[in-house]
Image (cartoon, rainbow, N blue to C red; front, top):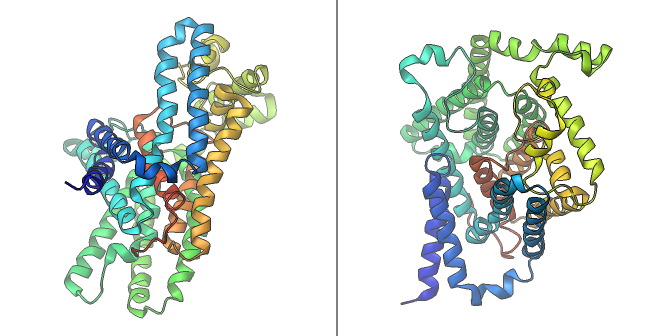
Length: 429
């Protein structure tokens, strides 16, 4: 038996299982990650010379013991948070599992394409299962709930799915020489985009709406310019037709949901005027005011321990013991800002460490793109997705959510796969 081929099959099986079940069966997604880890360990003698020189691997080897130590330290200081420290330290360590996805993708654009398709299928199945089809009228006239994914996170996932469908439209439509199949795929693409746009609107997540408004236009304009100079007249002709149809669909959906959109965008205007003119203490406790209070509390807590923070699982404890119920109305599990969370939990040193992680991910994409190893669509998709996540993270926090960690593992794994496998991404999407 060829051990190398066997471990490769195990690793690839896990790689494809993970995105396929990420949104519909977490247990199977965890199994996929486990298979990738087992296959990597079985082949550790062969791959060790490669990964030991990888700067991201070195950073992970430093960061994971650091997290464990400060989790233990926080549990000693606040014994009542011991269970939370263990659980949330584990969640932070999970953030490094994107290295498994990066390894098994091996910088292969064909594998990346398959993983993205499987993740999209998983998300769509999850949405279709969770919709209350018997009471569709009620579903369309209120903010989403009842989904297995938190609605704010769902808006994030939908925005990434939409930018993927828009940027990879050429791959979605296929070959125009097969007219019947070509038209069918275009129709499915249009239906999928309309469906996702409706869910995107119903999510009523202002943070995601802002991120999409800032990221979609420049990314799509850059890609559209690329398409215009591609020389494929048939594709460009159909693209113009689809843009017109997409605009009609967008206008129709926005008109259908205009009351919800206006209510969501304007209902706190009066409150924000009070905050500006009279101060936050005089404002009613709306969601935005609660967030502002949480941000102030987070900055105060960080200033008390600026270098190493309070520990990986201490945010809820700090909120409960630092803010009265009258200041926050409900119990918040975190500070609703990923950047402040890192500063409060890990201090400035931890923030620098996470910043270095992000920089290594960005560099791993830019270097091979400059050499012509990554298609423009892939670069724009990764850049757009990371930008949306960065803006969204100003108003929320994904690390403590299983689906959020799965999302990060996929996105960061795809972005970083070009770094540890220094070879040309030979299969074109």
